[in-house]
Image (cartoon, rainbow, N blue to C red; front, side, top):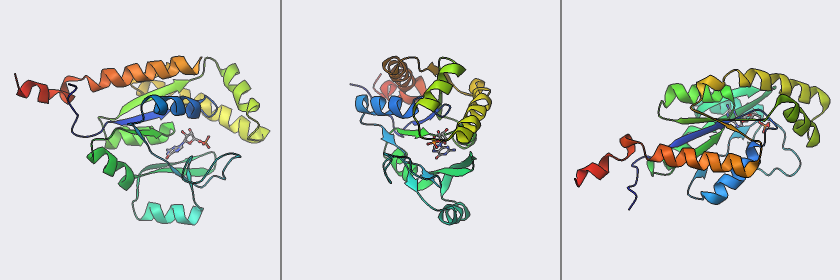
Length: 202
Ligand code: 5GP
């Protein structure tokens, strides 16, 4: 029998806009429905097909500022003129219940999580190449050219933070990227520090 960890694992997934994080996460969660996906708060406008409470909790800048003032975020960041943040209360409840929590956040947020939760597992998803990222961003037809340029510039800066992550997964093919993440999660759960209760019976 696999021994149960006491507290859930905090998993952080970052990667440039357009790298395919949402697709990878959807497939990952269908394989691992036991993982809780943290729905972030954002001040950005919903894109076509996005729903409040599913992709994000869409809020105004005023509400977001109030939440900052009340210290309600584990972390938050400003990304291309919009705020994004992770609710502290929601994820604490899950982790305390022994449930693994997945955050899809940018590199600034990941750095803050690393500071506050040193045991968090940080995974970076990169595109196979910068040209491919540029092609994918233009292909989804959700942002205008100025925003795309900003996002590409941001992507270059984000990729410089890769050495701060525990693992790097290249999203050349979604099924392959998901396979690698599943392998990372399995290896992580086998760490001795999470399995000390096995020794109790020895
Ligand atoms: P998008 O607007 O493309 O959905 O997201 C833009 C960036 O914000 C992505 O890099 C995404 O990972 C990041 N992001 C989404 N939610 C959060 C969050 O709660 N905190 C932080 N720091 N970044 C987030």
